Amino acid sequence: MDVKGLVYQWIGWDMDKYILRGDETFAILSCPVAHRKQLFLTTNSPFSFMNKGMWHRVGPDWRQLFSMVIVQTDKPSFFTD
Image 1 (cartoon, rainbow, N blue to C red):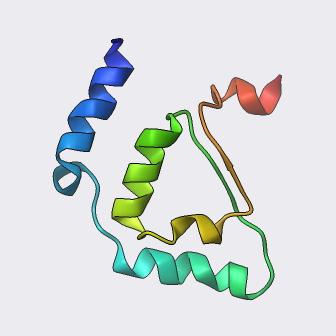
Image 2: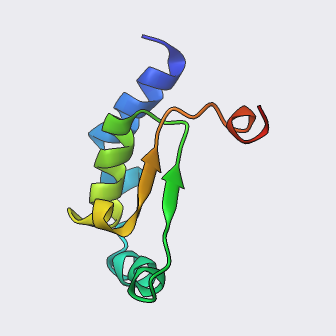
Image 3: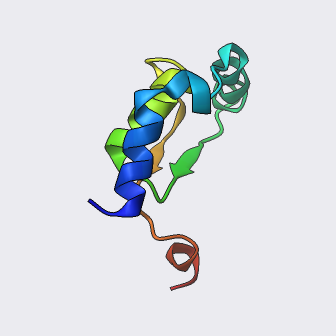
């Protein structure tokens, strides 16, 4: 396992320590969606880690907020290549 994999695993063991819960986050992200705006989420992280973090931060319905979710994007080259 590489260093990134270890970091993902380490954070995943104690989400409360590293990722704040955000009861208001779902409500904030819902506002543009309610006004027919589309949101997308892009991350360098693998889906398993990002899903666990978003579930923790936003709640189990986090995916309904995003029209597109892109993982393991290799930013910033994802936007420039």
